[in-house]
Amino acid sequence: MNSVPSVMNFYRYKVESLDILFPGEENPTKVDPITITDIALEKDYDNDYFPIIRLSLVLNQNLYYKIINNKLRVKFRLRIQKYIYNANKILQFKKDIINDVFCIFTEENTPSLGEKLLNESKKVNNIQTSTPRDLSTDYTFFIYKENELIKSKTIINSILTSASMSDAITYCLSIAGISNVLMSPLTNKNIYSQIILPPFTMLRNLRYLENAYGFYDTEALIFFDTDCNYIIDSSPSCTAWRPNEYKQTVFTIRESTNPDVFSPGCVADDKNKNYFINIIPNSIHMFNESVIADQLDGNNLLIINPSTGQVENIKSNTIQRGQGTYKLLINNYNNKYSNTALKNKKSEDSNIISVAISDFDIDALTPNKEFLFVFENSAINKKYNGSYRISRTNIIFAKQGEDFVISSSCEFKKFNK
Image (cartoon, rainbow, N blue to C red; front, side, top):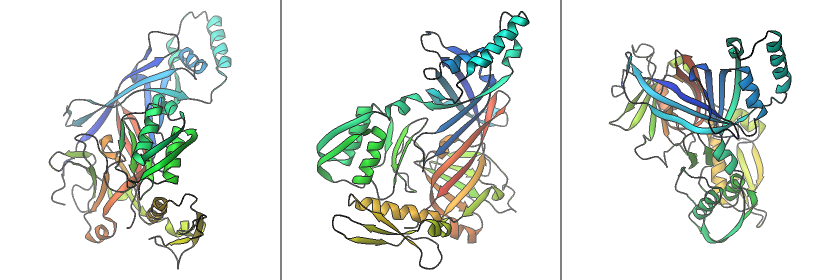
């Protein structure tokens, strides 16, 4: 591991601004960023289409009741930036990681009772305006990017002629008005005389196209992230990237005798165009879900084509007891790409790594990257090294002075070809 940097940098995050936009009001209500107590950012790339952002902050109670009374139309404009911190010095200019407008979701539906009690208390105590006591309540909101959340529900119903899957995807995105998309080159390059888009939402039409025709040899990862939107293959390789983006993140796990074993942080290697993140040995866990998955669901597949009656036997490359269990599926569309994608997805259950990391660059965990695990122990490295893809991550922004430090639990998967 001589080529791995021994000195890591620390990344810090700052909420530059939080504005609350109420309907009918020209000027936003500005919230002091210091009142934000913590932020959580959850991204489940295998099961969700949007990140879940939890925002906790201390608010004047009257302002909270105003938000709840306008919960279907109120908007939050949030801006968070990052910078490198090392030896009490800022090493580079700040850069936006979130700068967008969000809508809120809350189950609170009875603010009038609390608001009434607050106003009556003020009358009894002859209080005319808000006091510091009104700022003592911590509230939590779940927020989502408004633009993609609404536009992904656009109903599309059309017929395309002499079109490819790339044409169909582009058409759906264009009709919905969704831009800033990173898309991997499609494996399916066929031209179809006719492609029918049923009266589904834009998002459901994308999944219908994948099921009926196929995009890649792996399942498509469709995710509307905080900084861009992804339609990429879920392979361990980086197949779509931003201009000048680093395409690889390397996790290093040193031996316990190595003096740098407990060095947290992250380094952006400008020479090799990748990130290095050091993992403390007791914060990494390797596990295999394929044995249990085979008993519950079946790792091997028997896929029936109802048009021809042909049965395809797919033996997944997994670790399991005996010969394994077979699951019966029907391929209504005779889509060869989906069969391969199902096999590759099953094989991932045998190779899962979960890690806990801190003080890193959040840009090092984007889902389009190739993730490498390098162990200083040669025996462990032989078994677990190689390229993985990120499956999910849960990032916590914890308050440290006026800024935030971050930590994350992440899960990575690797399929055996």
